[in-house]
Length: 145
Ligand code: HEC
Image (tube, rainbow, N blue to C red):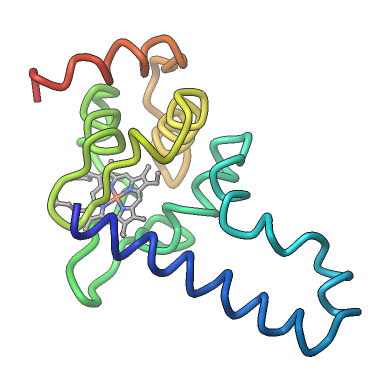
């Protein structure tokens, strides 16, 4: 949970920076729309691609090439582990090491969407579409991890 906490902290900082801008320049705040939606909006993304851009890209990078920074983030591009949808679901739901758990941060629909997205983009072309129902079943099955 330490890692997930750090991630929450980063979102809070981003929201804080935006609200500072808003205080000094109301017209900028207006043009940005409702800045109070900055944090939670990441949790309302609707497509798998949007969820990837909003959340996963920060660590796994724009083309899912991964990277080495504070820790090593594996590439998802051309990742043979992604052939198993359960493997991807388990990581996204429960995390591992530097990978945060998203079970409480994303809806079942968002988790299904982003799982399907990474399995069919970045050079991956794996079959087997995950549904929100699959995610709900899998998330109540934590003991098998
Ligand atoms: C805070 C950084 C961070 C974020 C955000 C993040 N990941 Fe990760 N991810 C990692 C790290 C680090 C690992 C390696 C974990 C390990 O095995 O120790 C990882 C591993 C994975 C793996 C396993 C890859 C493999 O072959 O072992 C998958 C799949 C994955 N992430 C998908 C996602 C998806 C989908 C999202 C967005 C919902 C996401 N990640 C968001 C850091 C992150």
